[in-house]
Amino acid sequence: MDAATEAVVTAQLGRPPRGLRAVAHVCPCGQPDVVETAPRLPDGTPFPTLYYLTCPRAAAAISRLEAAGLMRTMTARLADDAGLRAAYAAAHQDYVTRRQDAATAAGVAPLPDGTQTAGGMPTRVKCLHALVAHELAVPGANPFGREAADAAGPWWAGGSCLPGPDDTEDD
Image (cartoon, rainbow, N blue to C red):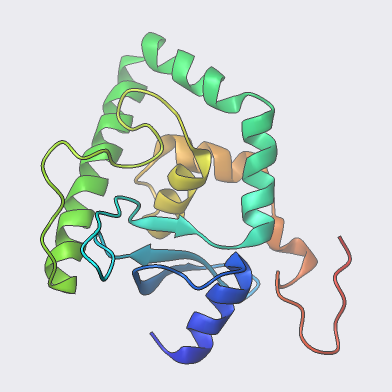
């Protein structure tokens, strides 16, 4: 990853990113909004979150959905909908496979079998940020990530989350 992109992600997060491997999705505003991280930090510490939502506007929009109780509603739907359970289980398996592939590509040991994936998969909905990041990085992979991204609305509509030197934030 080039230094300019890493600087954008650092500015979005308000801190240097850990285990950064690549930009996994670019927001319609032109900035990265999801990054892929290595399954282990440079010191070998396990880092199970493969896809990380970095855009502060996207994160704020998703936080509003979480505060409104959307995760509870989604989890309840898992109990009643076999098709949704199967799609969510497939999202979990996709995440595991991609994280194992990322470990191989990064030259680090994969995380042990049974390590949590992200967002509560496959049995509950715990973190919409992680599910949206997965869906944006791998369109069609995560049904709850897609629903949450759609429900969040166009977080990019106000332009870049990082104003240029001559811009001012309007929110």
